[in-house]
Image 1 (cartoon, one colour):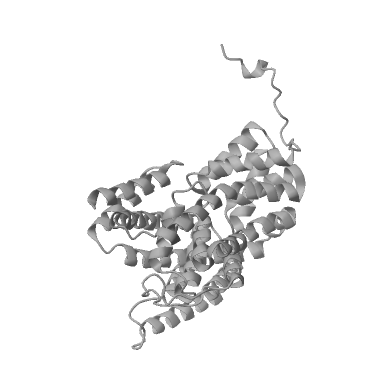
Image 2: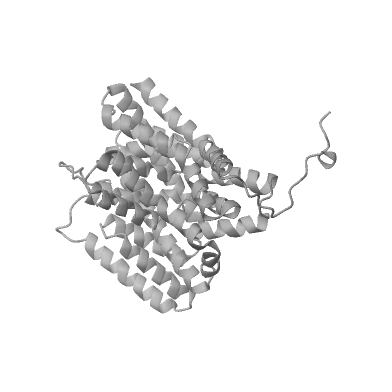
Length: 409
């Protein structure tokens, strides 16, 4: 007979009693989390919450929700930032650093190994290329689903929806991503402060400007991004450039890991030219098969840009903000980010990021859905993503799409 929980000799920890764990044990705990990080941020956050909040009661559910709210506003992968937060609660900044490293290490090691294999052997075999052709279609479905999921939380009124639409147009027009981000924050800040005429006037000016650009007779026929023909001659970025690309991209990932895609794609493919669109999509496909935040595909991007040192530089850069925001001062950020002025500006920036992802999704679809089989795989994967929710759904979709490509080939 199992013991009744009320009569068990095992003491139930008091709510809010964070244990001072040995550093080695703390690192191994979060290494375990990283090894089981399947299914995207929702599944990863749920796993952390179940063990540390519901079972071991490190903090109260209310405190957990407040911490999660902070990391949903800040850029960076929320699950990783929560690990840093819990590690810091247990053993200070050293504990936070070890917890964050433990969570990201399994995904980094696996992606590093896959990057080495990819750069050494490639995917030139017809059977392998056929499998990855359908996997790329499934990855496109994942990004489209992310647009709907993130947009449903961020674009909840006409102002945020307008900002997302303008940002998408600016991305397709080849405008530097910093401009729509700053403009989106300003527009939404004006709207939330009741200055609707100012906000509406600026939005009209932006719409007219984009319309005039798209109607230019000398405009290139293909928009910037994934529809742009790949660069014929590869560049060799410096380690500093790779680290800066990671740091800048990691500082702009508002709304989840998918938001890093347009920033890294612009750096690596459009402006940097150290990889092609097909290689970029291959990296996304490989990351979808790993127990890690999607943002770990930055390791692949860095490896193709500068080998093992480039992989380290870009990965450290892209994860640095996720460490810094928590280790430097979680409490201060929690107070600042709930100020109405800054909160409304960040909401506008997040709406603009949704537009950037949407534009990138359109460019990916134009590059990937060139054959009937890829289109069918895309539709089936998208239907499955909208129909079911499981922590194993993403790797199952990736594996199934690869199997379809193999069978048809």
